[in-house]
Length: 249
Image (cartoon, rainbow, N blue to C red):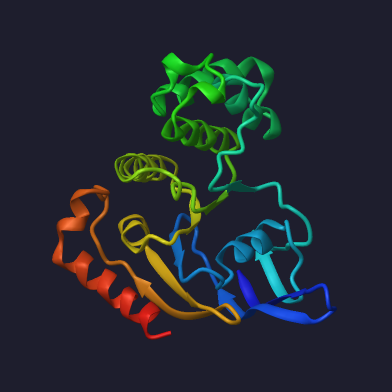
């Protein structure tokens, strides 16, 4: 939950520049929430405030009933760049999540095998990140996040650097995994179709300073196929409404 959150940065001249203004936001347990908006509207900054990586200027960020003043243990962050350890194999990168969440050593091999199978990475378990495609690297990064098993997943354009076909495949995979674990997700993206295809609600932000302009409830059937749902007329209507909101700014 965010209550009247404001964030400013001070430039080299000592001038305070507002980045986010009066942000009020709630997230239900198990909800998939997407955030869209033009560049510079503070989407990524918002995730960093929720994760405790940045302090708020004013207002409250509350996760699981606790005020966020440092990174909470039950929040996981997935960035646009995969941030895999380049000197560690796929298995070792994913196993790091199990280590961080305190999974007993004797239980790690079984859980690791489950995640590798789920993500289609079993044959690549001993590969180093440099030998993987962009899509496989993101699968490994997602595996590490799943291994960590936070209550809240923060995802900052995790598929933004991927080609269209790989992005489609990753979106389908994310929906499948989210359906299995029913975790809460906040997903930042520039791709409106991606936001509508994945989420339960879409928040549209406006810039200068960043603020919530509108919220769209996505009443599309679940379980949802990430490709087929795009053929529905309701899907097109929602996307067009969001485009209008962004275009009016």
